[in-house]
Image (tube, rainbow, N blue to C red):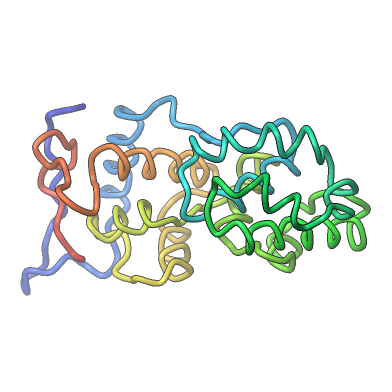
Length: 225
């Protein structure tokens, strides 16, 4: 970790400006590049369908647990056609370690059916089509767009939302509003990498409880939460 502090300038009222200056955003990106040059998707997948299913399973579950669960799931149901015909109880048993397994199993079967009926068994490449699938929100859609198709995607999970507020990149608690704020600040070509880097920093250093400020590159970041 770099020891140089990053100071977010304050206005006369002692609050961070509503919209950060481009120079400040460039500093944020530079620090993340220095600290997390190899950040990437932690979910293991071989095709867009596997990433979509794994991301659905990752809700309120660790990536490590998902990676332990998906090999058996994909061995039994390797594609949307197979999963769309699956017995729900069998899918529940396979994904049980990921928690909330009944809802997640139902979403996997229903979204697979939607892929077969509406998209010829292929995972669509647009936000609108992805979020129309059962169990798929903007966060999941952005993971798929950014990591399966190389399209710009801002994945606003709890870590990215928290870091965005603490660094003054957004003041909102709403993930969609945070995404919109970041989209105005971060170049689209950086969205996917920025998401991975910010999430990595949130997990490793900028934790919700007991953040590791003493080892953080952003040692003077404002506390906006």
